[in-house]
Length: 494
Image (cartoon, rainbow, N blue to C red; front, side, top):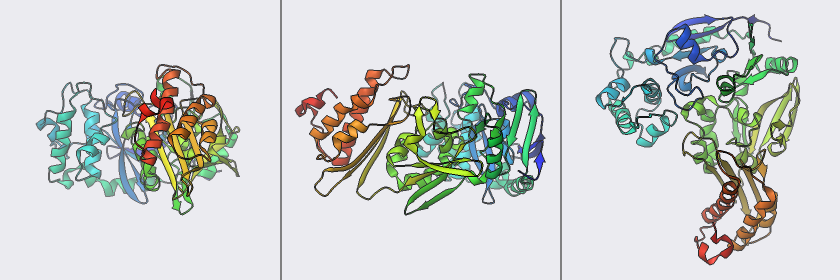
């Protein structure tokens, strides 16, 4: 148990220290900013992390350096902010009262129309301006994935971002840059190694001192809600009005931020965000990059964690299919006891995982990709960016010296109540030549693997046809075979 217990969280708000206690476990940062602090420049649009009108920057010390990321304040819970610096739109102008380069460029290029989304867009572009001195159009569009302009003013917004990047920065006149040293020192002083316990009539907010303290807390309170990035839990609060107490915040635990890579593979702590994992994962498995950059918007990738995506057990989570075909393994912990489990065995049925009360996902190990393996991961969604999957398919095939399939692993999300292997389709591939006839047989076998449901994202028929056609796409891309569907009757309907 932690030696010290604190009854308040401490953080910086626009460079000023805040100590907060007695708040409800479901209090969002957006509500606190607008209702308590009257910082109404941060807007509420969707209250589910989609539109980006509520975007603010949150800074955290990482290896002694203060870095900032954009997040959605509408679904970020206030209890997660201990030891951070929250910077709102009011803090992004120059200390001398002038407009920042991003703000001035938005004026010059007429990037603001109705204006409701503008504060969030400025925050996103300010974060890009801080991190990338020479962004291209693709970088700018990626930074704006999580910001919706319903006036469709993206062309002048992109022009504004390019103009801001071309401006010679007066770094001493940027509050975040000028205050980096002092703000970093303040955050370092906040780090006292204490467990935080905050009581409210609606329940407790708990922040463990470290991972061992988390294990003890969760074992003692197995009914608690573990909150990492709150990209799901935040919606439970704002959309379902669901009680989450006691809430245990784990996003700031250094022991869950592990990133290790060697010849055997990659191990990630369960608290590693999509953004933090991006470089190491896409370097080792470049075939996953397109999927990775379509997980939410930048704000969601900064908040959401791979461990959370796995632990929630959603059948349409973006990461499990690819991780399953790579042979990923999860480490589960309860108290001091740990056990390892293949990721595909973690998912039992809809809403049920192989995880006993008080047990949590501590890390994920992803084996290295064999040199002769072919990998692909595809996401199908109604909207290309910042949308939930209708289905997500992952394929891994290894060919022998004669061009036959030596091993095959296929997994889909959105086709069953859990992320699930396509074992009948795999069996139809193994031992057969990597050819149209083999793919045709495996495509037909998929109907033995899945009986998908119809919902508002896609019909069962559409899901099955997409899954079968993704196998064709994988075959074409991995083999270089010509797409002569008219000569292959079994595939012509694709």
